[in-house]
Length: 209
Length: 218
Image 1: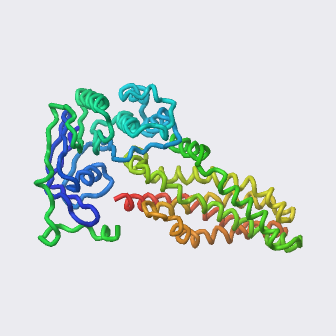
Image 2: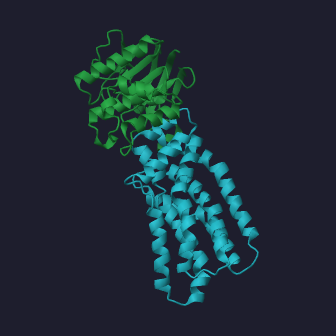
C-alpha cells in the first residue's frame, strides 16, 4: 500500500511547475506538503489522482487505492447530507455512510439539504466522503479550509484512526493539524525552472488547454 | 452506476432540476406553429411530422449543457473520474438519465401534440415508435457534445453549434418515418436506419465522450 514518486514533473497551463519531486509514503504514515501559493501542490495532487498526466517521472501505487478530495467537495445542493454520502458510498461500493457521518459529527445534520449547510459543515461532509470511499491512500487538498478549531481536531483524530488502521494520507495544508507523526515535505526546492532558463514546457496538446 | 442514475433522476425532479423544461418547450412549439401557419388542416398535416421532430430535437438540446457542466462546477466530475466507475460508464449513465428526463416524456407527449398539428391518423404509432428509437441517439450525441465543452464558460452556444450537424441524420430519418407512416407507405427502411444511428451512437460515443472529458479535466 505504498505510494512512491520519483523524478516527477508536473505542468499547469502548459508550463512545468514542479520537477524532480520524489517521496515515498508508506502505510500508516502521513505526509504534509508545504510550499507557497502557486508552487504546484494542487497540480501535484491532481497528477497523483490520475486527473492529468505527469510530464515526466514515475508514480507507483496500488490500483484503485487513492481517495482524492479537492477544494470543491462535489456536493449536490438539493440532496440532503445523508443522500449525498449514500451516493458516494454506493459509487464506491461501500456501506460506511453512517459510520462516516458519526465520525465527522454530521448525524444531527443528516436530513438537512447541502444548500443549507455552512462552509465548515460542507467541508466536513466533503471529508466524510473521503471516508466512505474505503480506499487506503488519502490525497487531500487543503482539507481544513473553513473548519473551526474543534472540527480540525476532529478531523485530525479521523486521520490518526485511518493511519492506525494501516492507511496513509498525503495532504497539502498550511494549518498545523496537530499530527506529530506527520512528516513534512517542502516543495520549494522542486520548483521547476522557467522555460526561458531551459525548463520544460508542457506537452504539445496542453498548449490548447 | 445504478446509484448515479438514481441520483441524476432525483436531481432532475427536485427544485431547479430542469425536468419539464424540454416538455414545456415542445408544447410551446406544437401550440404556436398552428397559430403561425394558419388553420388549413392539410397543410398542417403535411408539416406535422417535421415540426414534431424538430420540436423534440430542440427541446432535447435545451438541457444538454447541464449533463456535465453542473458536475464539473461542483467538483463531482473530478471525483467521479477518480471513482471505481469507468468514465465511459458515467457518460452512458448520464446520457440515459438525460433521455429518461427529456426524451421519454417527449415521446409520451408527442401523440397529444400531434392532434394539435392535425397529424393524419396513420402517423401516431409511427410518431411514438420513431421518437422512442430516435431520442436516445439525441441524448447520447448530446452527451458527447457536452463532454467536448466541459469547462468552457457559457459553452451552451458552442454545444448547440457542435451538436446540431450531428443531429441531422436522426432528424431526417425520424421525420421520414412519420411522414411515410402517415401517408400509409412502408416506413421500415428509415426506421431501421434510425435504430442503427441510435445503436451506433450508444456503442461508440461514450468512449469518445470519456476521452474528451479526460482531456478537459487536465
